[in-house]
Amino acid sequence: MSMREKTSWIAVLTTLVIWSYYFSVFWINALNGRIDGVELRTLFIICMGLSVVIMLSLTIAAAVMARQSLDAAPDERERQIEARADSIGFKLLEVLVPIVLIGGLLKLDAIRSAFPADPVGSTAILFANGFLMTMVVTELVRESVKIVLFRMAA
Amino acid sequence: MPPPPISNAIRRLRFEHGEMTQQDLANRIGMTRQTVAAIEQNKYSPSLEAAFRIAEVFDVEIGAVFQWKKTGTP
Image 1 (tube, chains in turn brown, purple):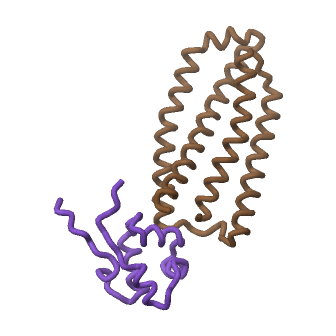
Image 2 (tube, rainbow over the protein chains, first blue to last red):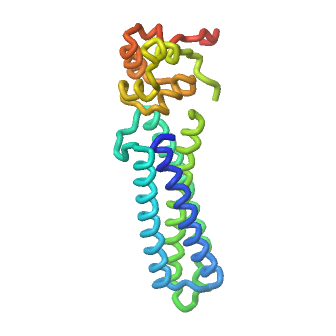
Image 3 (cartoon, each protein chain N blue to C red):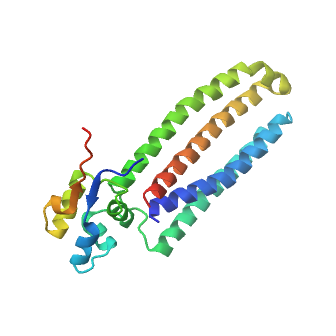
């Protein structure tokens, strides 16, 4: 397995575990009418920090164990795979961003009435997390596409 | 996706050149071993430049490494 494929596996698994937890906590709280910005910020920082630390350490460990270089330039096949994954990811982002934006705007009154204590702040947090989720989903799909393409030619 | 209508003699040429490993060939043409394996198994069609580099390593014409299989379609 090439270093780039290993990196994709690490990114997919780490993202799935950490951000699934973050978004499950967020959406369970939001659906129960409880959005605490400070608590959410702490959770976000912890998840972001954990993602970076776990991905970096696993990638370094994988490179050391396989005696592979971390900063080797991609060859033409790897560049082709990355370009296809980027293209699919970008198209997905083009679809998801308007869905989150339009969906959020259409549900604005429901969101405001669900959080009477702080309708503006809660709406902003919901939108921010909606966009964060589209980015995470896009990244998951992008890395998964890379894995599939790497496996197809393995 | 069907494999490209191209066959190659990389495996034979490697063995004729002192049982060169895929990693050795990959190092000499600036690619990963996985890409060389994919080319060898006809799962990836290399660029023209990479094809020439492979031929250069074996010191043969490009046609001795890669052969186009006639498909009968334009």
